[in-house]
Amino acid sequence: MMNHWSMTQFAATIAAATGTEAPKHSAEPLPSVVKLVDRTLNGRADRVLIYNPDCIGHWFWQKYTDWMVPVQEYAPLAAPLSTMMPSVTPVCFGTMFTGAMPAVHGIQRYEKPVITIDSLFDSLPRAGKRVALIAVSGSSMAIIFGGRNIDYFLLPYDGDVVQKALELIEKDEYDVIVAYNQAYDDMIHKTAPEAPEALSAAKDNIAAFHALCQKAEECWKAHNTLVAFAPDHGNHTDWDGHGNHGEFREEDINVVHFFGTLPKRG
Ligand SMILES: [Zn+2]
Image 1 (spheres, protein in one colour):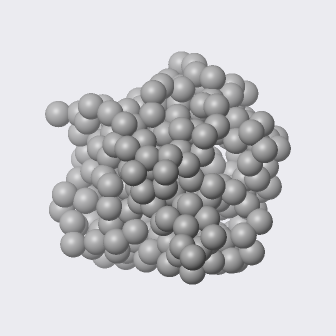
Image 2 (cartoon, helix red, strand yellow; image 1 turned 120 degrees about the horizontal axis):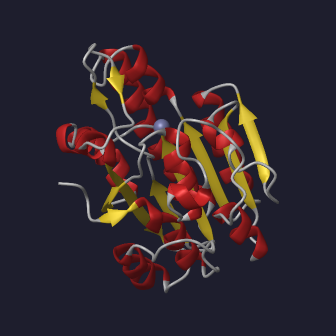
């Protein structure tokens, strides 16, 4: 069974939490996250940390549930979603940050043009929000939302992205920080979804999110913060034993986004 909620709801969820207009083509927000923000942040987050670990699917949480506890320590609310078809990186992130179906945002296969329709990277700056996008150079996330009124930090690989995100959280000069990591996706294609190298990359993603949230907890005390662990799609083992994704099957389509809040203190 495919998850009932959709990747098209992520953008509007962040918009609702920040009290900003949703991107023009987005679906409705995730109701459980709206309730969480209402109850714990009095309806409004003024800091948002979005961590995008590429390729971690719903099945990964079903099977490696204990490993994900550090994610849930900060982001206990699990929202099961279906991602888009074809379930490849630029198609799925295109939808995550526009809230629009692939036919509307324009990326319908593995290609990396700049998306021209309204996205969170447009709507948040329109509302006066300062946004930082930190991504691996040459990745989909580094390219498809180019040319917006935000600050881009395009770096060699995952560790550099995490270091920059820690630094930017500490400086507290951005309202919304988006950090993208890709090593798990890279490793499943090179090896297999549960090969030791791939699992180690996934563990790095979990540790990175935990470290970023810890930093936010320490440095954003004066703010109401929303944190999100938001992968783009899942993956499966292909006929040749390697990992792959892009198909309409549960392992590729079903993902879980984790959300949590850090209320202002003192
Ligand atoms: Zn991907």
